Length: 211
Image 1 (cartoon, helix red, strand yellow):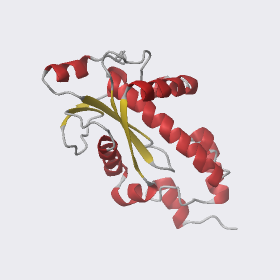
Image 2 (image 1 turned 120 degrees about the vertical axis):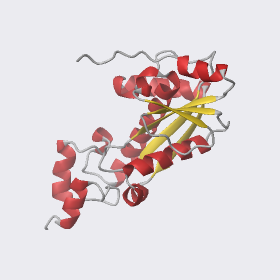
Image 3 (image 1 turned 135 degrees about the horizontal axis):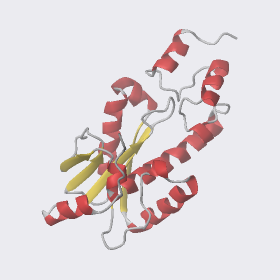
Image 4 (image 1 turned 90 degrees about the vertical axis):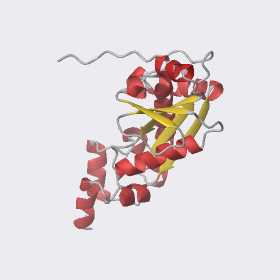
């Protein structure tokens, strides 16, 4: 079965605005899957007549393109960023922590949205209407912008953490379970930035690396 070929546009935002639900924000996250580091969410309110060209799902863009678009979004839109740290991920579970990060991202906006477009099929608790869009980062410009802000923000944080916890290659793998990361865990054991509730990390904690 062929996959749908989506092109992000402003139709979901325009429909909400036409119903009197302005401003509209898009929400997405980065970092649900990694073994280490926080989950980061972003909420973005685009300016309808000043949308940076080329917005797309951050996963489809090169690092240089994401960085360039990040700067353009910051210069033309209202953004809020929220995080859930490793302790919250382990205490709440990754889904609940992601919802918390999304709520914090909306709370960080300078303007309170009347409507939120959220990537995925799970709505966070927000003080406004919520519309979930599966594959929203590929279909909706505001969510695409949020995916870029969240991804670049988290990647930069992981590069900073890599300096505090060298050897795991977080500046390259961003905490995902790559071969490089797995090998480093086998040699060095988990750090305080590893998600102990995730099965690979939990197994190492139950069977520590012997010196």
